[in-house]
Structure formats: structure tokens, C-alpha cells
Image (cartoon, rainbow, N blue to C red; front, side, top):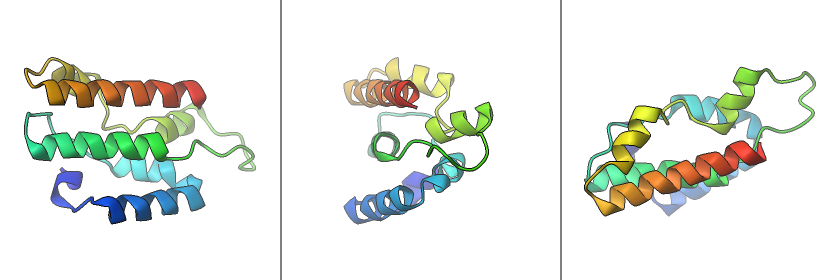
Length: 118
């Protein structure tokens, strides 16, 4: 996956957070580019889920007053990345790995909070 192949330490996350906070219109474009592979009880998979959950938690919501009313698809794209799917979440929370289940549940909670607040 894209996240697993790139370093995503604190400096990368900080830079990404600054970019998204400064230009909230990029959130939906960034979310479209995110990819997650099938969750497995490996460090790579856990770190990718944790990274996506952190970015999702910290990313700004769709700004109000963009000039034109956003469509339903634009709103959904800015709230939830398309890589977060029902099969992906199902595999994560049904995993025998407690860490993977925990990461999957955190991702679900963060996604639901973002949808509620968006």
C-alpha cells in the first residue's frame, strides 16, 4: 500500500497536518489517494491503519462557504476516505490479533465521529 511503502513518522504526519489545515480543500483529494491493503497482524498493516486513523482524526472538515454548495459526493469524499470499506473494517475487527482489532475499532470510532461532526 502507499502508506506502507513511504515513511510516515512524526515529521511526515506534522507536515501533512499543516498542509491539510492550511488548505482544507485538499482533504478530499488526499483521501482519494489513500490506499490500505487487507489488514493483517503485521507491523506494516498496524502502522498503516494507525496512520490513516490519525490523519482522519486531525484532518479539517469541509470548509463552509466555498462559493458553491458542495454535492453529497464531495461531502462524503471529504469526511471518509474511499479506502475505508466495510470488508476492510470487517477483516480488521474479526482478526485474532487484539492490536489489529483495536486499530480497526479506533478507525471506526474516528470515522463515525467525523461523519457526525461533518
